[in-house]
Image (tube, rainbow, N blue to C red):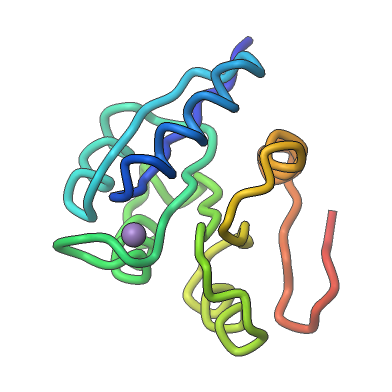
Length: 133
Ligand code: MN
């Protein structure tokens, strides 16, 4: 059964690139452009994974993740931060905030499908730098 990914990204070029790459791999895609839209689509679309930009209008990615993780119907959806801030402190911050992991920008289009698949299959990153499969 095809998996569904919700892409939350306010930058149109970035969003279209990710959408195109994942559609080519057979994913069903839902899109959101700001934090409120992200929460609405998470509830209505029930995606298998959310790729969530941190810098988005209305509610930032941290707030969106916090709210989704507090909602019974969304709690189990893996949320992956999509961020240009790939410094160690930022990684820790997204993991502590409840994200299951992160994918750094600029996106590596060859790696992206594998990264997405790993997270859907249960990959979880930890603050200690290791990865748990
Ligand atoms: Mn952004």
